[in-house]
Amino acid sequence: MNKKFIYSTHIYILLIMSTGFMLHVFIVPTVLTSTHRDSWVTVIASILPFLVWTGLVFYLYKKFNNEDILSVMFKVLYKPLAYILSAIFVAYFLLSAFVTFRITVIWANINYTQDIPDIVVVVLIALICFYAAVKGIRTIGTVAFLILPPVALFGFIVGIGNEKNKDYGQLFPIFERGYQDFFHGFIYTCSGFFEIIFILFLISFLKDQVKVKWLMIVSFILLMLILGPLTGAIMEFGPVEAEKMRNPVYEQWKLLTLGENITRLDFLSIYQWLSGAFIRITLNLYIANYIINYSGRKKWSLQLLSLFLIVAVVIPWNASSFFSFLQSYYFPINLIFLLCTMLLFLVISKLKGDSA
Image (tube, rainbow, N blue to C red):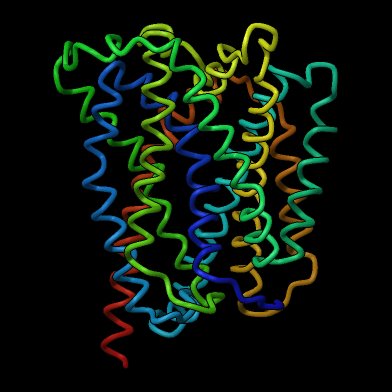
């Protein structure tokens, strides 16, 4: 595989676009449903595990010293075990791409592609993601760098523009149902944020060094990507109505007006959503293909992975049962997997140090 070097700035932006999309789109409705009005308190309290996790990720980054995580894994582990773990990671990244792809198609179908066959939407998105993945990590990082500013600008527009629709009293009282829901919400916030550990699969492409200060700043931005739309949904719709919404972040766009004559600006959210989904799907597809190709060039692997995604996404799956699957199974299992991955990488870093 042709390696094209990227800078740490690309890593930070990819984290904001990819993990930020998950937190913004997936985690906000899930934590609202599970933690209710207390969800915003849970998110604020999540800053502690966020910072601890970020510190551990940076520690591993320094221990691996810009050496490819796959290279280290094959050096310090038995090869059959290394191959099994590699296969598990490929399956994980494919599943992550599938979940993002599937939820994007559901959202598009509900809002603006009702008269277009799903297969057309799926194939078009898959082709764009496939092309970017073929071009490599530098292209993905550069595209993310170019599309992030409008995404951020539109986010500020909807947040500030809806200020007149916000009732801060809706955020209180807190803990009216006790403390159980408050702690339950950590499952979902951490499940979304902890995936930043997978930047370790990209460190061998870096031309410069990742700085802990900037990683912490990115962590704060990711925290705000949950907190901002979450509190906005509660203040604008009330906790009861916000819980019923599948995409409360998108629904906030429908309240936004520009003066008296422009009353529909929600088309801007299409750019936001598709930008985040594109980067997330492409990045997961690229890493999965990178792992497959680590031990040798497999010419058709990326095409087969893309075809697998297309087939998986077009298989009918009721939207309600899909979202129920995410909340009941995907996010809790994802958190367990990420914790096990951290433990595995810590063990590998220890074995690497002993063998040095």
